[in-house]
Image 1 (cartoon, rainbow, N blue to C red):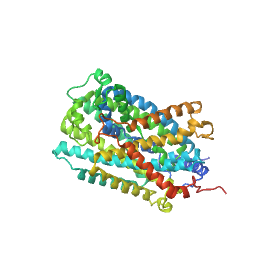
Image 2 (cartoon, one colour):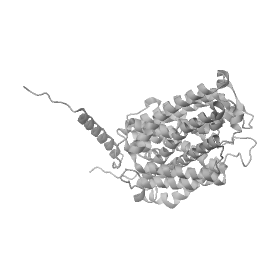
Image 3 (cartoon, one colour):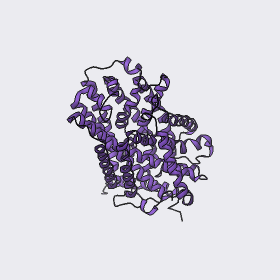
Image 4 (cartoon, rainbow, N blue to C red):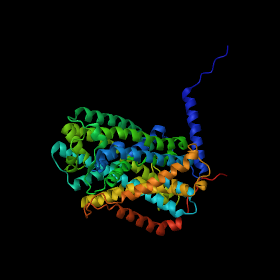
Amino acid sequence: MVKSERRDPSAEEGKEEACDVAVSDQRLQDLGYRAEFRREMSLFGVLGISFCAIGILTGMSSAFQTGLFSGGPVGLFWGWNICSFFMFLIALSLAEICSTYPTMGGLYFWVCKMKPDMPILGFFTGWLYSMAMVLTGISGNLSVALYLASMAEIGQGRTLTRVEITAIAWAMNIFSGIINTIGTKAIGRMSTFNVWWTLGGTFVLAITLLVKTPVKNTPGFVFTNFQNFTGWESRGFVVLLGFLQAVYTLEGCETAAQVAEEAVRAEILAPLAVVGSIAGSWLIGLAYMLSLLFTVQNIASVQATTFAIPISQLFYDAVGPQLAQLCLVVVMLAQVMAAITNFTASSRLFYALARDDAFPLKKQFMTLNRFQAPYWGVWTSVLIGCIMSCAYIGSAVAFNAILSSAAISVMLSYLQPSHHPRVLAWTRSIEDFGPFCLGKWSWPVNFASFLFCVFICVLFVLPTAYPVNVLNMNYAIVAVGGLFVIITINWFWWGKHSFKGPVKTFTFK
């Protein structure tokens, strides 16, 4: 009698996972890099990283007033759908390159591979994008402080000073550093949890607002009402200014690429995460926006609010003080996770730049702790965050200009790898596509998203109020110019002599 051999499912799964890891490591080695990180992120973890970085609840809540005062409901609704469509095209374009080059560094590395004869482009893109990620993280941590300040004012009638708000932002920067130092598993689990938190939070916010708000707005108001608190007379231009809210909210899908060396089958999972995060954010953001538009009680009241963040006034008017604080807690916790993810991305970018001699102190920035975290990059982000947060004490206008530069820098970074070489020199920009390929649609998608990126970059630096004065002037162009000056100085001081492009850490014998 022959005994039947029993299969161990867990053993087979282990072998399959080991095989997937080997395939991923081999693909990384083909790009010239030795695998340094443990591949511990699943599809949900990688998707969560992009989803967390986009931060639908946080971006929509923090920037909602931008569209509300520039076009009102009609601008918000149509602006959201139009911008979501074009951001989806950008995501498709980035996903195609991410699948071809599934490595840490993302935008920066892709530019280097497609324009190897111009290392200065890769250097500028890498530095610009890494600074944008740091600034976005700083913005998120300050937003957490502003949510707490609003809760203190609603619950206790106490108005926090700028120094107190900055101190909270400091604490959040340090907290983000601690969580990122713990390592890949903690960030992966947190980003996975954030997906469910965003879904559940959107449901809770929508139900709370729609059930408890005493007076609901009509569909005519939600889809056709126009508002203008900008001072500009052109209705079309005012509505376009409202587009900035949607773009600001939807930036961040490419963050999945920053953890490509920590994911199994990154050439498949990372591009799926890039595209999926935008598609999911489009739908979830639309549901959240509609609940806000149906329940906003008085737009003028939101515009004249004394609360630290305007969305607090909308919640307060709609559902009262107690439920308003519940709404703020839901959004604030999502903001905490989003800010942590931004520092995850910036630390990986610093690692990638140092690995290729585009960043000083190469040995230090490439050092991993026992949790597999590039802690030098993490705490450099924290240090910059604490220094930059101090600007809020002196001038909220100056601080907002610095943060606006982050949004512009991200869009400028999108232009470099996927659009400039692939639109102007498409036939020779990528020789061997990865599993995710758009085929004949690649050039049209890139061309459309290229035009949209240029349009948004111009729109971001235009004055948002009229008449223009020192208090309402859009200083974003000054802040972006400052970043370019800093990067240019570093190019001539460091990059020109040391950076020649990606440095291979693995060679086949």
